Length: 130
Image (cartoon, helix red, strand yellow):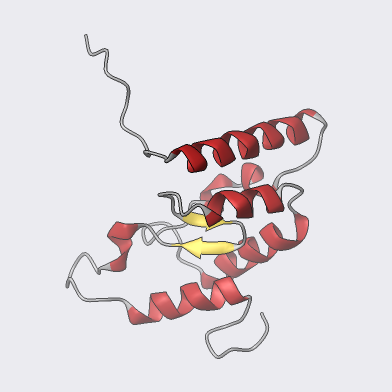
């Protein structure tokens, strides 16, 4: 029987501290009956190349983070520590490191990177407000 802990992200002290503060705030808000958008539809916020499919969903989720999340500031503070995470966090779409390369050809996916930047800025790929 294996007794080692399951592998997971490794955080610095600062990342761990801000993550604990964020997690407690989320738990408190949920306990008070407040809706946290990413907890209602985690699949959308965990967007990666295998499940994303729709750029509009990423933009919608990023905008919802910025406008409807009661713990947005704490989430942004956690993201500012540059933790090893991916998906839509604090209104930003952060791709999984393995998704930066096309699995079939091994070349960079410039269109997806442009979409990522647009989602972070709250615009479409042409720079118009989304």
